[in-house]
Length: 90
Image (cartoon, rainbow, N blue to C red; front, side, top):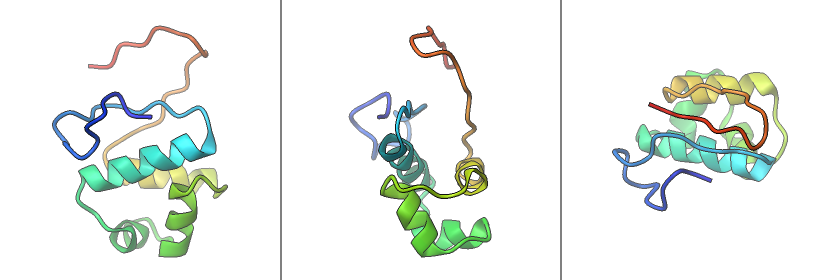
């Protein structure tokens, strides 16, 4: 789930909350789209394959390294916080 309903507007999407594999996949897809990359382009950049990236974006399990590499290449990072914590993103 992103912080805004306008995920196609890169100026509005600043962060994503992911509490499940499908939500994590949505976050990776949103981050990729904000960067204007295709699945093929991002997969090539991280040394993976388009089918693997597609599985990730559909909420299926892939390696943690693939998730972290894909997000980093799109300019995002993972922050782990306690559930229910108040988080400020600037």
